[in-house]
Length: 121
Image (cartoon, rainbow, N blue to C red):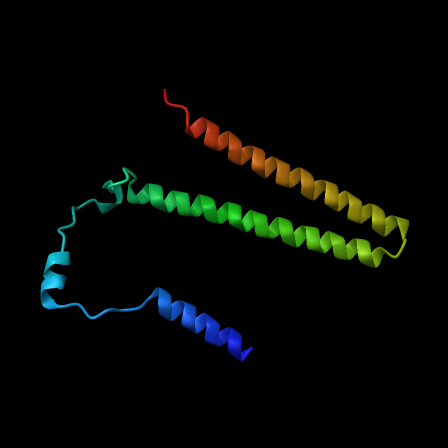
């Protein structure tokens, strides 16, 4: 467990390293900010709100993938522990079918949203 904490600490420290900047580098890095920074666009043409929404969308679908993996592992455990009990086996298979249908619905909804968002009217 000690090595796990050390690896997390190393990862975080590498991500948030601070560098000593000279006074000239600090002065040249100061950029005036407009009053409405949430709606300003960057070089790529996306606003800050667009970046936040893209992050939330990607996070939700990553969470859904983790939940799907966890459900399949849970169903596998139910199948293993069924021990040829027809009632438990039927419950596990039903859960598998519902999980597969749920994953299909999530993927279809994601594709539909991307399709509708890509239409230029």
